[in-house]
Structures are given as C-alpha cells and as structure tokens.
Length: 143
Image (cartoon, rainbow, N blue to C red; front, side, top):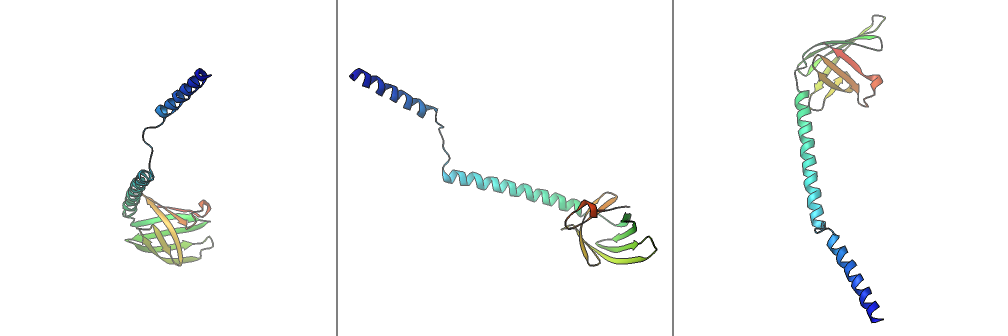
C-alpha cells in the first residue's frame, strides 16, 4: 500500500509541475494593466486629435463662390465671401426669400437666417444638412 501512495504522490507532483511549467510566465498586475490602459487611451486620444486637426484643416478651405441647387422644388443660390454670405431661395411660384448666412469653419456649422445646420465643403460642392443629418433633408449645392 505504501507503494501505491508513493506512486499517487509522484503522479500528483508531476501533474502540478506540468501545470506550473505551462502557466504564463508574466501575469499583468493591476498597475501594469492601468499603465497599458493609460497608454492606449493616450494613443487613442492622439489619433482622435490628429483626425480632428486634419478634418478641421480641410474644412477651413476657401469656400468663396456662388453655389446653386434645389431644395424641395425651390431654387437655392448661396453666395459666400469669407465666412458670410446670402442665401436666396426662389419658390416655384416666384416668391423669393433672402437670408443672411454665417459659417463657422471650426465646427462646420452654418447659420442660415435663424436655422443652424452643418456643412461640408468638398471641391466645387457644398453639402448642407440639418443637425440630425437626415439624408432626406440634405441640400447639395454646386459652384
């Protein structure tokens, strides 16, 4: 019986040694995990800043010019000089409405009369959306 106990003890010891040998050598401590998390957040933050900077730089392009387009059958003419302009809307029956326009390139917002919208200027095209960015409310104007 003592030989059985010795064999069983030896088998248990071998199993335990095998488990220890196969376990990962470095386990992340809470401070290591915090440092890894912090450096990931810094990298993510830096990438976000670079993205914002590059999109802001592209949005500060020269948007001067005359843009034309349609909105629900109304003819739209937008004349832009610097960060201001005029929005002329001519309805199908000939009624005309003119509104003052102010652009905020940093936030890509445009104030058309009392309305606040967002815009994207891309080459000879300007896309104007409501704040909720519903595709059905989008106005596309071209130089």
